[in-house]
Length: 314
Image (cartoon, rainbow, N blue to C red):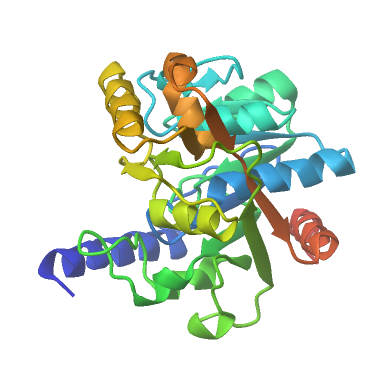
């Protein structure tokens, strides 16, 4: 481990210890909080998983909202996300969630303030906390952590992508295995372990497309496309949460001409970040991510039962 990673790890451990010993206090909302987070920077599927959970809650008739920091937005303060808005105002992932779910999404630097805002508008309903594992200032009633196979061999920031060591999984109420992760690779004991199947649903894909995206693990997207018998004529990758500019559009159109491609393929998240430039890339196939949680009913029952038990402890 590098010196900087060692220093970072010491700071993380000290901070967690202060919360564990209740020296640093958490703040509690009136409604229960279900947190969805991970150990590493991006790429575990938190956003599609939150959408999946939201669909489950909608199916059960459980009112809820989503609280998010709104990473990458240029605005400040607490805002109610308009599904018809743009990524610079609300952030790409909150906007994507709002467009998928018939539920309020609220962004704010302080998730407690965002939750108070939501409760003032919609009452003390259930809150889904986006990317909440490290946001310990807000009390949560159920903690879900997504892990990937890469987490087991990764290093702490800044040498690697891990925000916390694997040992932090002891705080989780449930661990979700993604990307083929195996439970035996993680220090998980006496916790619910859920398996997540993740796939894509490409339709009307142009032959020989230019594949482009700005996501945490772009090669995973390309491998999924190839598994669906879609072979890129060319590829263009950008940083996660990339906000596309007119120059990017010119570069992509030039790449299409140079590679003799017949169109473009990208992700839903990138379609949000294209904003007003979306219509400039034609034909364009936007590929949605599809997730399936094994034994869905049991997972949802576990969340709701735990929340109820903690509301009325024995």
